[in-house]
Image 1 (cartoon, rainbow over the protein chains, first blue to last red):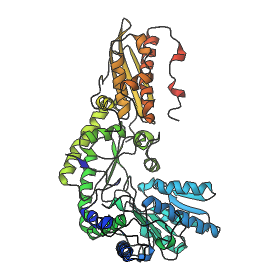
Image 2 (image 1 turned 90 degrees about the vertical axis):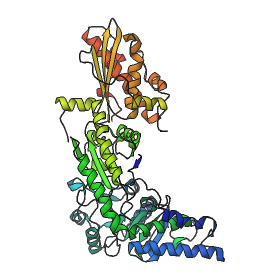
Image 3 (image 1 turned 60 degrees about the vertical axis):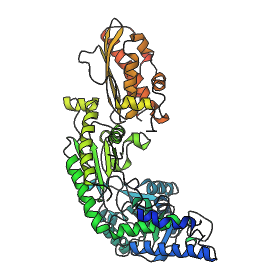
Image 4 (image 1 turned 180 degrees about the vertical axis):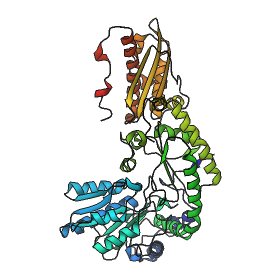
Length: 395
Length: 142
């Protein structure tokens, strides 16, 4: 048995999405910018996809910009708001300490230019409150950018409340919703979201395609210059197969959200309950407001990369926030941001589920993970020291 | 898995010499939990020969494989041969390590050297102090 439990990294494409893409490789292959009939067929498909995506988010089709993915959308949203603010002398941005690097690195670039960024603390409840956002807003705040849901620990942020606060204060609100779209109910108008980033491959769509929703009238800055595609806001011939695959996957996900959410959440809860039995472990993330598919743990006395390799050998594909899996000496900034110390953050495990997972697969994970954790602890000098009292337990 | 060589995976999946020697003649430990790697080596030395060696490792796949390989390379050898073991030799014996994992082989070398130093200290055997790592001042974890 091989269980894929890394759906926050990427998902398998759905048959619906694959079927939706295929005609656009060799049958409807035109350039949507071409005037002739072949091009206009492609243009029709592009318009239809834009309408589908807009319907799923509760916005107008003209408010959707297709991008190469979530990272590009994040970059464009943040840079646009920063430039707009700058023109009005506003150079303060509010974000959180556990954002994705697509957001954090863009903010770091702006900080070098003289912008000031407030990173909201996420230690309390492994989440932020709308109150924290409200208290951080200043007269010179030009943007609030918080993720919709955290990719590593699954916390779902109070987006509607943050949106209401931003609207009242007149501050643009962007949310990186890469982990949320297709998994949670979203309506950008009701939630007062000004900009939202999404990525197709997180909901069984293709890789390399995403979208940015931008409230009508908000001045966007181009990241990619060139032709007049996407109302002049994103140059480059549209990735039509990808866009059509994304639209189909998004509609499929949004149409089935009410049946998928409880089923996936039930598997998640079974995993959390089962793995909590492992001594000296801790769940990461907000247990109440949580992505349906996210399970995140720290196990004391072991290291995440060896855990992942052994899980893989035993048929479980997962991920970790250990330093050895991040390619740096520091473990995940998300785990450190919620207050996990290095020693414990190295022993982290993320299992992320989708509706393709089965109860039998959950049984397999629940059998394998405790065995592998125990095996690695049996050869760990840290675990020996913890057990002998030479070292104090943290968890 | 393409991440590591077959040798690394073999030593990771089936590590040799895991465990503890209760009446060890020398024990060495390097690394710290903050970095995510700790290696502990136990030596049983008789007549300058390493009769037995065991290890415990908290760390990634290549750290466990490096410990396993390093213990195999010194078992049955003289303490002087063990002193000459380099991280490069450990990495080569594993058919190479990814560049960012080379420090795992360094830890294996240092853990063995620390265990030998402990043996020299316990038996009042003189040695050149400059030959031994100083974990307190190592830059790896900075």
